[in-house]
Length: 142
Image 1 (cartoon, rainbow, N blue to C red):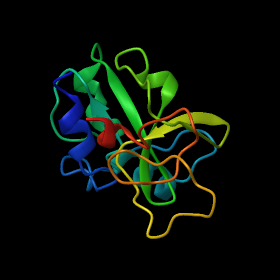
Image 2: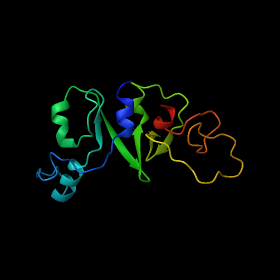
Image 3: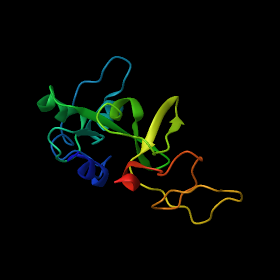
């Protein structure tokens, strides 16, 4: 799909240029500091517009669009399988369970050394994989 390369090359978790100085009311149980910090961080992406990453405040203009949330795991960007499998073939990509959710990494995570006994690696970056997979991330499959 045309949005895949822009998605995997996007820089997520940067402050929003449009909302970083605005203040918003906290939701019940949240502090103003935690709410504004979470809402100005660009961790959303509109598959319809294929533009820059979005913060929560930017999604108002994308109400009827397909917007996905990018998450972080050990400083690497991931997306939930349940969000992306409807619009993208994930066959051959190893998924992982992180915080009780099945995710795939957006980009490769090369390893400097292979563990002993590893028989299967990513065809692009040579990361160790389970036997039935060919790629460690969306970026390696592209």
